Image (cartoon, rainbow, N blue to C red; front, side, top):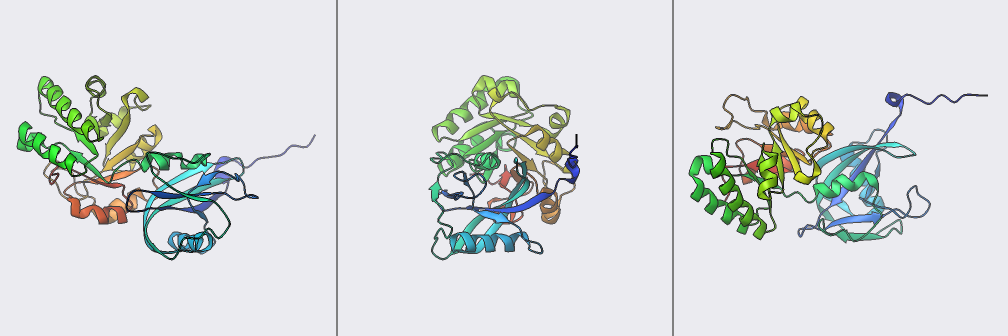
Length: 322
């Protein structure tokens, strides 16, 4: 009997693929259905395709969108990269957020296309590799951190209430110096305000308090992250973590967290002992990273554009939230 020797995993070739998350100002994004004759025909996916030899990722993205949809990319931001093994191949998907393009969008391969909202996907089935991307699309660009330790509880409540009215949708309660009883009362007030606006609240480091107060998840400290062998139970909801280096990012990836915060990007009063990463190192560390990353440290809303150009989901900040 003859034997077939399969290549060991480290020698299985990886197919490099670009994928476009084409976004409308109202949050809609485009999905395309794989045409007949292709692997996984009938499944929905983000437009894109294989990177040809010698192509940069951005050039491949521009070529694929012209060939498939007849549009020219004007502005695209690198985003998440994920490796996924199908029965027929292992692919590394490099996702870009395409926020500006020109030309009339025409399906040139006779494929069906559909604009979808992240909160309500109306087409199926969707290629398995795209599931985490759909979850990432639910995360907003701003992740606020409560400022009560600096400005007081009442002022913090007023500021957060105004921010929620102005569109804030994701918030972390991080008040390390607050007494437990006051923290619980403060958290309950913040959560009630946030839920009036369909915003989500995570509590820093205390999963039990998050569960007891009806928060939407927990945010792990970097120390907690490095001690864990599995992520908190799904009953705790969203799970994010603070990271400062590649080792901690890798730990978060292994735990399959929903997102991470990486910093400090710039000098900050809250972390005076940590040297800032700077934008170039920030971008280098998160290149090809599979989880959404918020940039943190000395940032304001004016830094959102550069953060997303560097590959970030958005920015996290305490000062300047209003």
